[in-house]
Image (cartoon, rainbow, N blue to C red; front, side):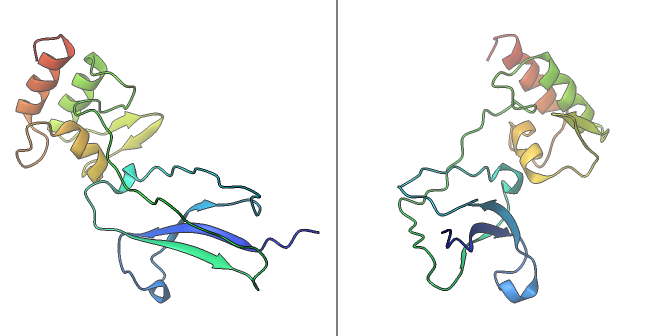
Length: 147
């Protein structure tokens, strides 16, 4: 017999009040799990934003849902705009396009200007008010091993 109802993780970059309707689902456990299970959820699309995270259990005590060792960490390589693990010429081209406001495509998703915060954080490696030609030059230098 399956007593599972719902256990999920939700996020909002708007209001922290669930009644405002800003929360979206990041993760749902498909069933009650019998053992401790490590789960990682990618929050990169929300990088640079203030967010509210909700752990949502719905049911009539149908199962126990315990959360332990909750951690939010950042692990991206500055300049690796396409997130392939290296800074190379494709990142230089993406940064150049961003510096002049052209759309960029990362993992088959097209991002028009204005770009989302996560994309800007990966490209703005000089941390000087957005993506500009200085970032292009710095990413080029990094891609050919000068920095």
